[in-house]
Image (tube, rainbow, N blue to C red):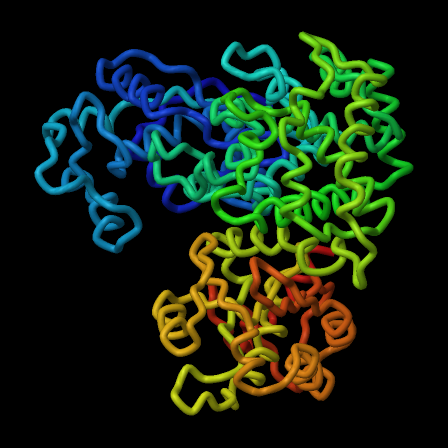
Length: 594
């Protein structure tokens, strides 16, 4: 199965990188976490000709993915090497000279990455050549199946000194509970993506801090955890958000507060431990899908409640623990479990965000204080105190928050961020009206939406796709909307949330009538079944930061879909008609996945 290590020049590795032939499996791999000093130290070692640790790659079936490799060990190192080539950082004041590497020079000219600022000191020509010629020690092997890959990864990383406690627990473990926690963490942080990601796309879904400025897709300070003061940036880097989620998930599954300690959290991830068996059995009964949606909905409602209090008051820590810079993990646990009880169990919605924030003042001081071990009894009392403070500010509302508006906000944000690297499965329309003075209906838009529904369905049978109305994908459109309607867009990733409310007002109608125009067009369309029926049952109205957005979900299909006699597919963000050989190839895509 294994092969002896061989040399792979950095130049060869960069070619594979930019051809998207190196990929990462996020079921068990961690995000990019190295700081710039750590990356610089590696580059210095290479420049001095020192050996660096072996890179371990798995080669999938040549028939399935010829010439592609899964990185088992070396994600952080490879990212550091290629980021240095692309001028993401300097080492000892020196940037790599892109002009000395034809492939990188061509990509820079195409706008794939930005070169070093004008006037920067560049690495001498000979040093650039030596760097590109450096031989990485690489072992490539062909595993029997995916279980062997995860087993190898776990054996390599479970004892790693650089891994945090939670990363050691997760290393190589793909059990239902471990996967649930990992997926929830990605969705709440905002770095959710498809399971397999090209290494070149990893920066887009990784997190740095405003101080580090590594140009990743997210900054720690903007995540829910750090923005609200629940965790420090360094704690987020060490995956302590996953510890909190494991704690919350176990508490819900066991029906009582989990007696939290480092040892008990370890036990949840140790296959021969009774706690591991207990949590896996409980999850099988409860359903991972149900628990995932309930926790996500609670987070969405809680976040919306906190942020409804205005920019001056949307940080939880100064309210809960005034005068202190310490994280508020204990208080947050009690707050979350109170919201879960009210929103999920009792189907109640927050009615007065300001009153809720006021009731939370100095809550941390009332929490049970333990140095190492939190008992079920103490945590139960903490939840009871918090519930007593907050429950009067929840009321029954139709529809309940978890199934409408705030409950969908988390999924909505993740879709907007994922769309930058999964362009084929996402489409955005600023609205149904043209951005002209007349504000007339875009008569061709409905037809384009129908073609896009068909095209997204034909991307492949792996996952759902989405069309959003009320989101602009061009900055100039958002600027035009602000000029015409006075609506300031909310930017998420590379998209601009503008909402449909402005068009509802122009049309002097109601949101329901606006949505019905879309529904009516889909009903009248000659779309394939079951696609047509499934789409009609999966149209949602999302309330996001005071703006209303229509979401059309396009469920994954098991065969080619048609609009009348025509088939469409997606090429990046474009919808195109397919016929002849292309149609046969599209049919093969679905047949080969069965």
